[in-house]
Image (cartoon, rainbow, N blue to C red; front, side, top):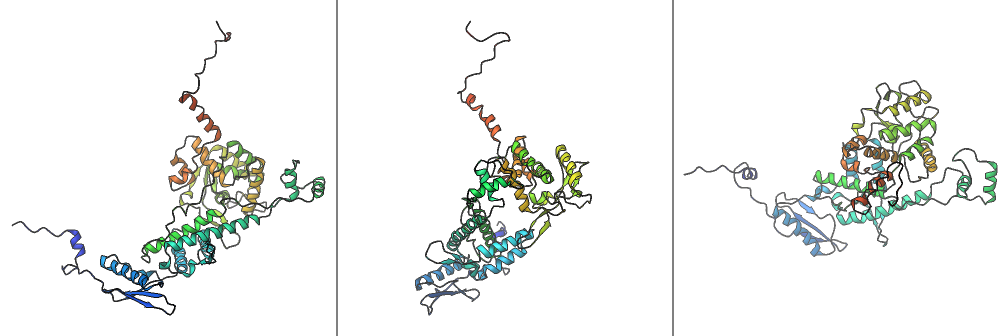
Length: 478
């Protein structure tokens, strides 16, 4: 007789320690459906194994709906995939703030404060329901298990509408920092400098024209969409953590593409435009523009550089920190760079080293902790002032669509034009994924024209070029 084969690992894992087969728990009855004073029905059932009574998170309009809810959960007990939904009886507000405070992936105080503020404004607040019936959506008053996909869809529509309205109102409230006479002079074709004192003759002509002022700025078509995508990603991440913590069974955030903001397709920045921007920048900050283009560093990292972070003998720079505003706090705050890989010494080309050497001699104090790019009093240059300088420079080259971050885009594009691979650009930008670096994989108009010039010959549409006649001869019939 052949020996009895040993039990399979699956059977060992499913059997209790006594060796007896596990008895399957079976539910009994159909639960309870109690009529409330309001006329609605409250559903509940007893778990046969624990004896605990579990209640539905909301009441039902009919007794049949309440009994159907009971049957659904009792059937799950019979199948062995029952989930204790009562664990989700925690307010979303409490769980979200706990998640923000304990999430190890959030390393920046500015990010944490921004998330808290946006959660208060767009997740917890009572938002008008966009259906136009006068209702509202308030996730902050709900528990985790009360939030279902339909509720998330209503909240998302209400949140997008509210964020859009806020962004439009904010854009229209922006007042121009320049004198309206300067705007009027440009509009009427008069010669006027982008800064400095206006001539009495120009002011008199402007007054005689009726003191015209620029129209109120219009919000962009995509106003608020980046904020809405970020807020949705926050809610999705929090509820995904609740699934991991076994507080809810599924993540109710199921709106495809809601966490992705639309990308604005800007024309690439040419080398001539970059040079013009640098030349039209104040001399004190011109080297910062070149540094951003050569190294693709973010503005907060550029304006946090100190003299100790530059070794011109070895042509090395050390981007060890970043400066910026922390949401809800006053003043500027220094912190670590956005990505950990940024914090290391990196080699720079000779041309940038030469620019930095001249800048250090003229504008930077001898102290090793002196900032490279400061105000005349040695203070951090505010982002608003940096934006003002950049606006004046881009206006000179008729590129109102540009932002400081487009210098980073230009740096990546120049890398591609030099023959760099996507991996090279990813490392140059300190991005973690290829998809992030692929956003910058664009070519200049000139190179695109050069590449397209060969299409005709490839398609057989271009006549073969006729070689020039020998020297001293002219073309013509024999």
